Length: 177
Image 1: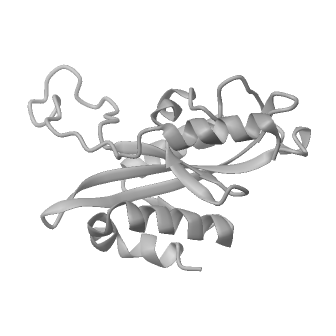
Image 2 (image 1 turned 180 degrees about the vertical axis):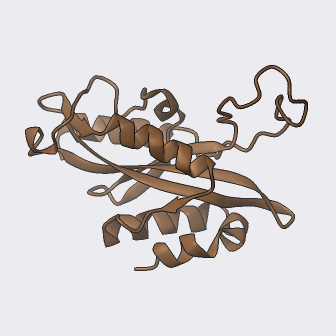
């Protein structure tokens, strides 16, 4: 791991380790202005660093300004970044279920970042579509590699065992390695 990667990992570790769980939806039930807009109050971006073996919350990803993404020009072809470090950006939606918060929507998107050449790969349409699917309570993680699934499962389980216990059974099944 080069020095730039070490510095980025330190920034990631210092970031807030909390999920967005906000209530009081301003568009709830009134049918007026703002109805139908995308509400990001309950979604949290989690990065899985495959090589580093860890996961962390980075709210900057909501606007493609996470510590991992800053200073990187993203290309549309994965082959153009052959030495990229693999990451998964996982959109986690949390909502109240059976008396407490639970993971209800979890979708993952592949990324690679090569700090040396300041280039990376990600599919912006995939990231946006998966964010939307997470908000719609979809579980899309089965395409992740086993190591990444285990990192994500451990992170979600250890973050709050209550949220994990109330989580959708499909998520538990799909993250089982």
